[in-house]
Image (cartoon, rainbow over all chains, first blue to last red; front, side, top):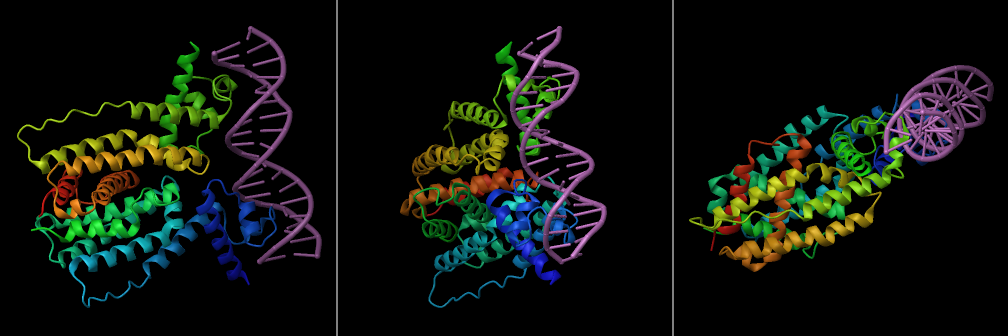
Length: 193
Length: 193
DNA sequence: GTCTATAGGTAGATAGAC
DNA sequence: GTCTATCTACCTATAGAC
C-alpha cells in the first residue's frame, strides 16, 4: 500500500544518508534500496523532492526520539556516583541510537536553520535543565553547587564530545572506554566538599 | 605568479567550504572567489581536481595548526583553578580558529578515512596526554588522581562538546558563557579532596 | 597562465503507458 | 502506484586561442 512504500522510502533513505551523507545519495539509489526501480520516478509519487523527504525523515525520527520512555531508575543500594554512572551510560546508549539522525541534522544545518533553532530551544535546553536537576539531587560537591547550570552544561558537553569522537573516529577514540569515561565524569560531579 | 594564485585558490576555497560545505561549492565558484573567470578551467592549472584541492587545503591548514606556538603561561599569583581556566580559555580560542578546518574534516571523513586516523592518532592522543600532565600538575582532587587519563578525556570531551554546540547552533547554545563554562570545568577538575 | 567555448556525465524531475 | 523514457540543469574537466 501507499503508506507502506512511503515509510520504506524513509527507512532506506535513513540508512543511506547515515552511511554516505545526504548530498551523496541520489534519488535513484533511494528508489533501488526501497525496492523500486532505480530511475523510475516512483519516488516522486510520495515526496515532491529530496528536500521534502529529508524534512519528513527528520520529523519522524525526532518524534520517535521525543516519545522515548526514559528507563525507571533503581536506587536500591547505590550511592550518588553509581546512580549517575547508570544515568550517563543510558544517555550514551540513547545518543548512539540517535547517531544516524544526528549526522543528518549536522549535514543539513545550513539548508534548514529553523530546524536547528527548534532543536536548540527544546532538546538542548531541556537537557541542561534535567541534567541540573539530576546532579543537584545527588549531594553534589561545592563546585557543582556554585553554578549548577554550568556544571550541567559541562556534563552534557562531555557526553556529546565523547559520543562524537567515537562516531567520528569510527571507534573508541582512545584507551578510555565508555564505562571508564562515565565513571570519571560521575566521580567529578559527585565527589568533593 | 603561479604559487600566488594557488594559495589564493586555497584561501578562497577554505572560506567557501566552511560556509557552504565542500560538496555544495562548484569549482566555478572557487575560481570566481579567487579572482579567476568562473567557468574558465584556470583552476585546473593548479589542481588536478577538487579532491586534490581539498587534500592540499587540509595539509596546509593542519601544518599551520601544528606549528602554532602555545602561549607561555604566567603563573604569578594564580591558584590551580585560575591557571586551568586560563588554559581552557586559550584552548577554546584555538578551537575557534580551527573551526573552518574542522567542518571540512568532518564532512570529508568518509572520502578520506586515512586522514581521520592520522588525526586521531596524533591530535587526539596528544591532547589527552598533555591534558593529563596539565591537570596532574595542579594538585588535583581524588576523582582525578584515581584515573587521570579518563579525567583528561572528560576535559577534552567537554571542551570539544562545548565548542561544537557553539558552532552548530551558530551562537552560545545556552545561557552559560564560555567564561562560565571554563570556570565550572576547571573547578570540577581542581577542587575536592 | 588565463581566457572562451564546449564536451560529457550525473542527478533531479516530469510525461505518459500500464 | 510503478514502470520506461526523456528533458533539463548543473557541474567537472578538457581543447585550443591568446
